[in-house]
Structures are given as structure tokens and as C-alpha cells.
Image (tube, rainbow, N blue to C red):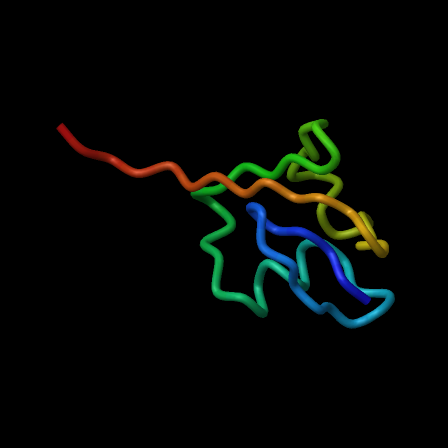
Length: 66
């Protein structure tokens, strides 16, 4: 199935949780926030939050700097 991630179409396995997908794709779970279909997904829900066809995710990563 396909979902949109930061404006890119990505193929993902069916019945995969958001947390599993993020881990498989190398995201540092401590440094990101995720929005799905324009709503923030709380980190406490990532493990039970199943990805579905045509979802739109925005993933932002916090970076330090000066």
C-alpha cells in the first residue's frame, strides 16, 4: 500500500505500526514529531497507530544549532 511521507509517495507493508515503520526507516524516535492527516500523533500512540492506505504523514526532526 502507499502513503505520503513529507510529500513523497512511499510503499509500506500492510498492518505495520507507525513506530515499526519509523524504526525500520532509521528515524531517531527521540528527535521527531509526526503529523498524520494534519493531526499530531502522540508518541504514546505510535506503537498502536496502524498505517493505512493514502495516509499523509509529515515528519519533522528537531535539530540543534546556533
